[in-house]
Image (cartoon, rainbow, N blue to C red; front, top):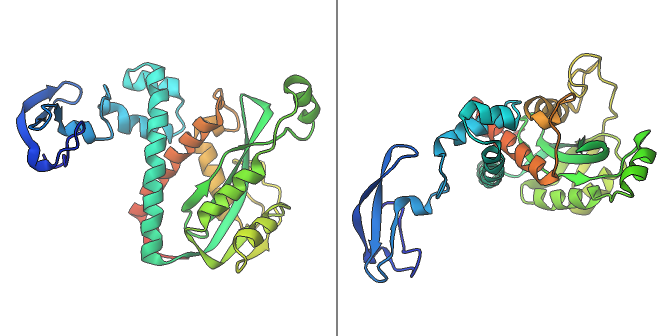
Length: 300
């Protein structure tokens, strides 16, 4: 009864709980301790309070998680683990929520050990939902030199360039939520960043105002982007030294690892919320790898 501290029905304390045998869980071939409450008579088990409660295919969770962050589409993952594609879609939401909570705790531990972060790179990645006439922007902040993502948001923006007129004719006027989502991201970043934090940004006109509003004691340096070389993902292959290499490398990596963000792919995002879940899963797996390499033990 290590994981059980109270009754889920009447909230009786641990002293009112007694063991009541075991049952075999066919899903993962484990024997689970059954528990009975002496006050209300309810029976439950140690599995009641676990994150995988009521899941039927627990064994696939780690495989699905790894595949989602390794450039595999949901249908291929479903074929690999032997489940319906709807199961993979449901696990995407579940894994995304868990990944967000883990990353928040990971960053809190990092700041407690290393102190507030003093150097950050910030930029936007542009993608789309359903069609290129419905673009999305993904503002993201990354710790300078460490490649550790601090946070991101997904926001809809109007189509621009040659597609702007076509998009308005087909889908009407599209709202721009990028400013409010960047503001929400910067409000979250106040938890982790020092008052005198330094931002490395490109020439986007909205970034300086955001920095001044949320970090009055901070500073920023503008590094205009160069055109990437022909090979690679565009953000990664530069013709000279790139001061924004960390954020550009992060964007190139996420495009390579998250299937729906590939430059050329059959997969597209149907809902911005699912794109956010997918990126959260990728970030969680990336940070685990960075932890093994020691990135979380040094400050830039």
